[in-house]
Length: 283
Ligand SMILES: [Zn+2]
Image 1 (cartoon, rainbow, N blue to C red):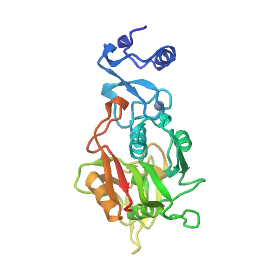
Image 2: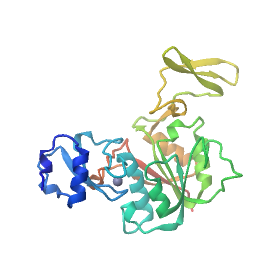
Image 3: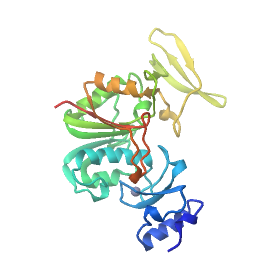
Image 4: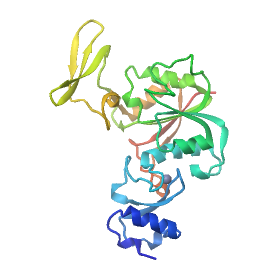
């Protein structure tokens, strides 16, 4: 078999071919310390990741394209709902478990195969605005889990409404499985405190937020942070670990689990300020 250890670059096409031809090379056979084998916990595909580049948004699976953060959400989910299998693709279906996704991606097909799961979107059907839930369409106490990955930093303030709505959507004992970019600061930093009548406006090459406060005062914010796109990917806040936990507890949820230690076998990079939080509604 070709020595994978001599590969200096990802060469994904070659690795894909090798995976089709033979079983994966055990870690002991890897000569190049830059590469580490891992098993994708979403689709079950053996992979290799570059150690020094493995971070929250990297380490893509060659088959399902899920990267570390997405694998971390699925890991927390299967760890909670499966008693004997951590790989989502191999898990026995749990159609008794009702799940709700908030703009999930890449793993949605498998989640729908394994659970009674529906993904939702902010701006198209099936539509769910976590700030203003349409309770004629959504039923309180109806979901066993909600997956919400890197969404909460983009919802309009006050973010407390969103946590309250999550608690209402969950069944007693149900869990919200959450990731957000976080710091270890003492509190969450809200970028815009008193948004009322606001819009994003272009000024030359930059975009600014112009807000008319309730008292009529006009204010302007520049140095905006957008995540991977335009418009509604504006970052409204930067959570801190403590601030997120406080928000969850203030909404009447409890912290069931925090996954904050890397899972090397699945190349899931986690740390004290890069974690998956499982918040549970009391029974
Ligand atoms: Zn995969």
